[in-house]
Every structure is written in C-alpha cells, then in structure tokens.
Length: 91
Image (tube, rainbow, N blue to C red; front, side, top):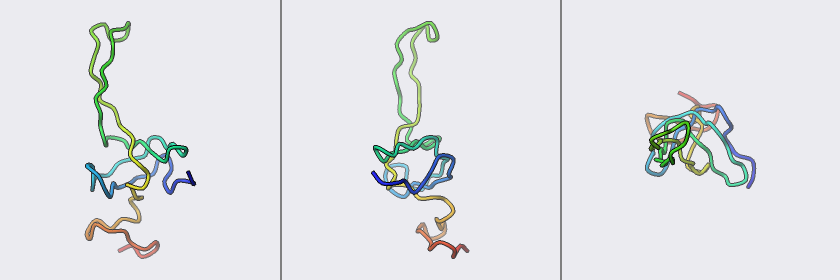
C-alpha cells in the first residue's frame, strides 16, 4: 500500500463505520495492511488464558484496527458541517 496520510501521534476523526464521529490519537500504523490503531476506539474483547500474570484468566479490552481510509486528520475536519475542509481554510 502507498504511504499513509496519517502517522503515529496524529489526532484523527473517524468518518465512516460504527465509530463515526469519534476522535482519538493514532497509536500504531501498519503501512503494509493500510490499517491503524486509534486510542480508545473500536474496542474488542480478548480472552486470556490462565498464566502467572493472570492466575484466573481474564477478558481484556483493547483497540482493534481501523482502515486508514475511514479516518481523517482532526485539523482538516470541520465538526460543524461534519465534512472535510480544504487545507488552509480553517474557520
């Protein structure tokens, strides 16, 4: 896949999907699959087997990946109209 339009540490807004309209910070970007992890969004539950760290086992919530085409950088997003704004024409 081509170079992503967002990078680690960017604030983004989800523009489509179940998490639409929510904001978060990019944790990780996978350029090969075109997906990224956004802090606090698309949470999934993972069941963990018993181990020394989790003697009872556990159900852990963590972020799932979101396709890069479903997010936009927060600085080019107009929250009032819920649309993109041309770069450099921020209200």
